[in-house]
Image (tube, rainbow, N blue to C red; front, top):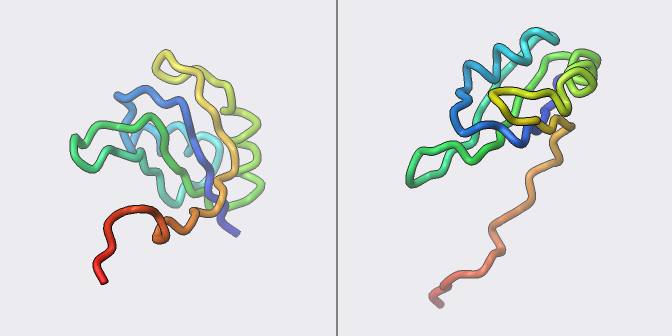
Length: 94
């Protein structure tokens, strides 16, 4: 079963392919995405990696959490489910 990992503390210069290559050393990577600002396109400093095997994902957490990547210490843990953001504030017209 696949496991999605949250990766925080990324340098703004890290790309999707660099993130994928880093985690591919630990096992099979299904996807790797650095989250970018919608307007500027600049990295927000975090991303997500989906690994094809839970054991490999756990190994990646153990091996890479706290590791220095591009001069920054990264945080790696299992991603939490995305919260429902539809009920936020904002203007509603009746």
